[in-house]
Image (cartoon, rainbow, N blue to C red; front, side, top):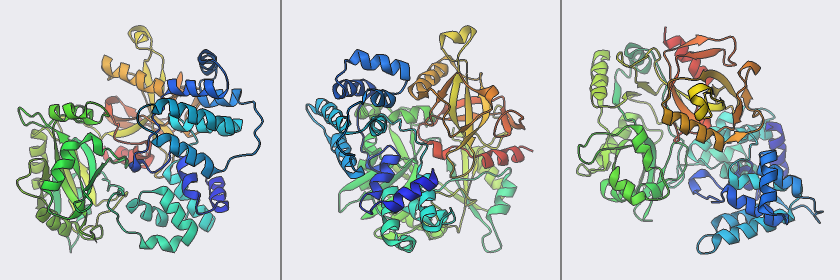
Length: 557
């Protein structure tokens, strides 16, 4: 796939390669642009009926038979087309459809898409139908495109890291591809942070003990580490410019969710002493009556499209800011954390009740880190994050500049140093009591390697869920169910689920420990696994890797 995509980009013009990238991902722009089709399945059935002169019932019957509306379009598309459309033509018409809003927009969208399908051949129609539904299923990711760019320039993947470094600070894969296509790899070195374009968030690593954390993260020149509370909230990056009256918030997936947090966007202008800045931090809900922090499941309820104002009053947020990446025209990524912290302290207003400076201690003592960790657990937080005091900000990397200390002796099944973020690959139909749920177990996997879109199985989970969680799992799985095993999944035939799922649902799993496995394709299995929560704030690209699972296996010893 990488070679084919590299060949396509090489043969295409610089004016259309960005569109190729977006469409191959099933998008029209980077996720942070927030361009959505707002075309539900029921509307797509009407589109196909209108495009192919069929009744809604005929489309529904064929859909039930084939299980994919793209295949339904290809089945009914029998007309001879005069000439193929260009990528740019298709893109422009899809874009025009997506931005159509206001009174009568639903009917206009249906008409526009039906007319577009009428102009396309059967195979093109198949994929164009899947794009607005979010079910393109090509198996592409941003990483696939980064690999393809390296392949185009060098004939292999050796340039991937160099290209990825640019993507990590300018997370627009279409723009990166255009630059490489038009000006070559050298031009990427001139890219700088830009307010309004999210930076890939820095990630953390795991180590078994605080003694090893201090040893690994210090040196003769750097004898101390910083420790901060680890909040069980939602990671947010805030970009703002007072001059442009611009403010935006982005998730760890780089999605723009500004409209969901009106309280944060209002507080930024009062709480930050800068003309423009990019802040990194964690938003966590709290009970307005008691002031106590709320669990993640409550905070994530703020992620919604409707009733935003009412929910903001019901679940107000505090944004604990722990880093500053850009301020007043100055890129701060390369500065040591100690210097960024000083700039952050002077940039936040001390009397703002919403935008807050994350507390911090600086120490070389494992005993002091344990004490601070215990203090955070007593407050209902997850633990602490330990950071190298002189390290630069490392976008998109999972090195040892940040290490999380979450484990506590009292935690049930606390044999592992951390939980795993796994992908739901499919489910098994229920028996006995669970026959009523229609689900009795589900299969989860981890990424085969960093940057890969391949997944290997690590656990079949059939216990540890509440009735409500079983119903929610069934509902989520059915939304992304597919008829055949996705080509990204490596699964032993003895573990094939009754229903396969596409790569969308990420869950956080806790287990007592990890053991070697002769049947799971990861070669490891989770012992006594249980669902902690659905990770709607994480994409499949951010799921735990096999190497990380192997590290957890070693750490438990």
